Length: 221
Image (cartoon, rainbow, N blue to C red; front, side, top):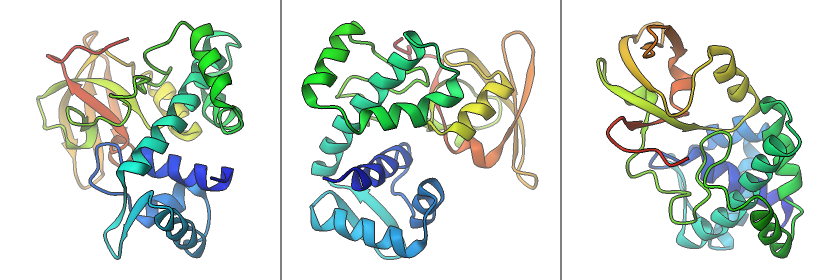
């Protein structure tokens, strides 16, 4: 598979987390390409048996697509860990740099990196590195869907530079209980409270890409 197609498969895998399917609009946004380009790319992925395309409803991964996506995400997240732990890059720079690295690595190099890093369990952004958990969203709820007065932990989020910068600006931590104290559906805002009583206002659209677990479910580090 070409590097170009790998990028689309990665975007579909990441955007399908905690969603039934991925819309063409989402792929267009994150790939920063035209609708016609996305249509052709997803058509090629479908021809290879990696996605199902459904008119008007979006794209889903096939089992073969999920297997391929796991390999891509494993290499990608290992590179994120490497850039964070070993090179201490600013978090906002890591996703793009990690993808440029990962998309050129051989399987032997990926295995050697996993050994070198002592087989990390999660990326700096909460992404799982265990193959059986990498695309498992069965316990995950998008922050945008968490009801008022519920307490959850942020277990991860979509790894784009803009979203990384936004989460850093909010100082919204992973694996710390947060309570949804109110929401404003007209303004598309959620209001959160942390254990130290600090309050955070989160854009509702962004909250669809922030992933949470109930506080009763332990988060693996």
